[in-house]
Image 1 (cartoon, one colour):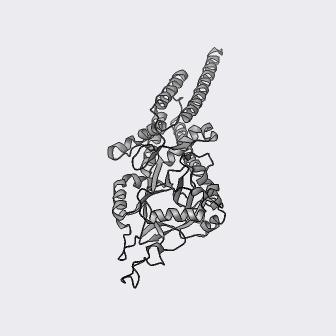
Image 2 (cartoon, helix red, strand yellow):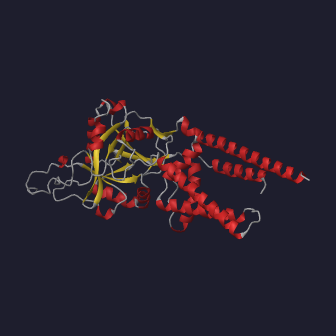
Image 3 (cartoon, helix red, strand yellow):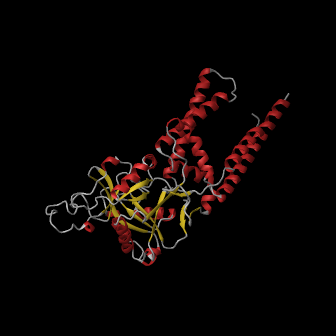
Length: 417
């Protein structure tokens, strides 16, 4: 294929993909539709690096099976390319060495892209909400104090990550630890509207389930009201003394703790979206079951970043309407939101998330890379599309110049006596 033909193919494919109908990049998790007054903001640095940031965001939104499908597709495409490309004649051993080296280099590039997506600094897409009475919340995040947390992901870095993603309030729920959360609380602004607020929680294994606990009370050493000795008295149990527990995913949903003899809820909310790849997968695969559990146990559906310091992409956000929240103290705001969860008000929290392609199962899983690519380009906003077109134009120009240089070298070589 000539240089001009390669450039034409690149431009044609890019034009088709970028011409796909534009859809809102943020949708309601339950309805799948855009939410009025909710949008993604892309800082100038993000747009300047739009293809890089967009691809890394795209990879962060994939489930484990989709990652496998993408990697297998890339390997297959690489092998096909190496088979059909034109080669100079060389010995068998020389060709084998070249191909092995090329494959190792290819894998190195793939691993490098994934590693940078998890570890490298880059601008973030930020959620923006037009309603000043809506607070954007994360119920489940971590710091370096968790055993699986990134060592550089301290509470201040956690605060900056949430701020850059568009959150107003987040609970630090380190694994069986509350120290980082308490230190972060001491550095909160005086009022919630003055900056990003962090509150204390923890993640524990309770009744064989991983739950996020809001606050400092440890449910493993605190009996559920009504379940302790004397719970059979005529007095109603003090359910408000029990901490707010959120059922996390991925987990075995058959074991979600149910109310005990005292009637107090053991868990008050359940994740329908979780930022970990396995959490994204279960949130989509078992959505119907999660909604049924929430309805039968009167649990509030929530989302969690579950971020341990890996990556620069927020998958979902919780929108909670709290009139006048900006003038509240962080503690008052946290208590107000905990009260909404305790009341089991299913409409108290609206979960919005980055748009993904429709889930591919069975025979359609092989097509998930194509579906993912369509979703990637279909979800680009106008500023992003403009940035992509600029980058594609630069790439096409470089390809053309490279082809012209090779052609001149070929002509010079043929003219040499």
